[in-house]
Image (cartoon, rainbow, N blue to C red):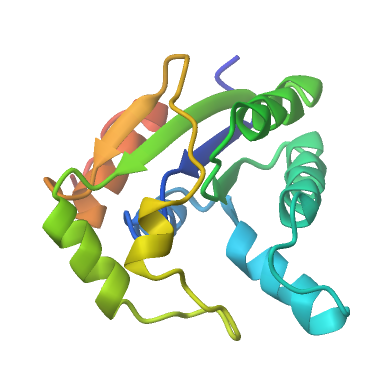
Length: 176
C-alpha cells in the first residue's frame, strides 16, 4: 500500500489559502499539481463557455488526475470541492486507479483575516476573476459528513501546513 499513488484533495472556500498550501506541498513532494481554477480558465479561453461552468472543470480535473494515478504518479488537486458529490467523485477516481486518497479541508478560522485575503489577493491565473467577500459568504458549501484532515491557515503558515501534510504522507523530512 505504501507504494500506491496518492491523491491529495485540498478543498475549502475561496481565499482560505488552498493554492498557497497546495503549491508548497507540491514543491515538497514533487506530486503533480492540478488546479481547477487553471482548468476552468483554459476552458473559458478556448471555448464560448463562460462562468459559471458547472461541473466542466471538475470533470476535466478528475480525468487528468486519473491519467496520472493510472501511471503511478501522485496528485494534489486544488479546488473548492464544495459538495458531497464532488468529494465522492475524487474518492472514486482514487479508488478506481488503486490510489490512496487524503481529503483535506482548508479553513481560515479568523473571519477578518479571511476577508482581508479575499479583498487583497493577487490572482496568478490569467483571466480569473476572484469572488468578492459577499460571494464567498454566499458560496454553496456543504458541511463535510466524513473524516478529513482540517488545516487552519489562520493559525499556521502555508509552509507549516505543507510540512504537516508531508509528514502525514511520508514522515518528517530530515531537514525539517
